[in-house]
Length: 320
Image 1 (tube, one colour):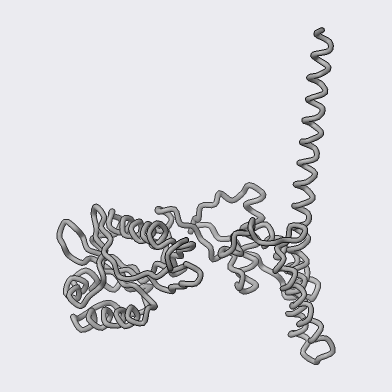
Image 2 (cartoon, helix red, strand yellow):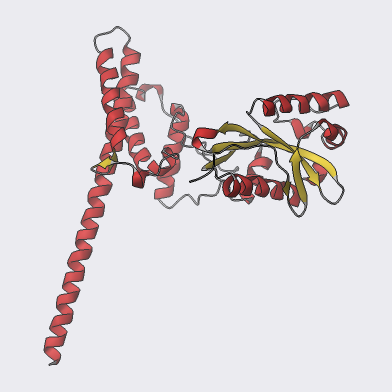
């Protein structure tokens, strides 16, 4: 049985860096490392310009730590013993054994060095191997290309094209991504110089358009079910005809919500409930199609194996 998932302050030793619990004693070093504006361009607070700024940042982090919401670290360069940046575990989801690595910043002199890469490696190793995390998320601003490339260097990938609760436009980006991948036109490597846009004329935004789009989005979700339901091992979830049983329950609940809207004056609310229902239809359709295709493939394989066996017997008979 796995121990409880409960991230707490700890010292993580690496070759180039050491991560230790953030404390007020790190304030002077952090002020020296993080006094430039560029470091804080995508951070929620401005650049550190005084020792009071550094202390305020540290004290705010320690409040979050005492409340059990975050685990802040100072990034220590081992060769000098100085704090050169900071990072945190945050968004601690203990029941789901999940957390986020964020609030990471490194002074300009230590960027594109082993410091940041080893920092992330220590945090990931501790989360997965020692804490038993099921999921670790690294978030960065969509405009922060340097941070995105740093995440890619340690094997991270983008998940912003395909969150279950994304808006319509983000969902269409997700749809395009999957279709490009299936067509062999998408390498799976994020290239910030490439831009894909899907422009829809206002005249096409009809009820039929939204029905078709949500139907196909449901089919896409079925193909990526393992990514959609990250917290579940779908191979162990009870299913009916290949569809997880809980999805049928969600479908029926959505159907009741749709029926409850019929006859009311709010046409938009009715459409929203309708297309959500259509999305489930797409999910069922793709799951059943894939299941049928797999069975046919298995059947053809069995027939081919039988034919091979018969051919072998015939060869033996002829050789006698």
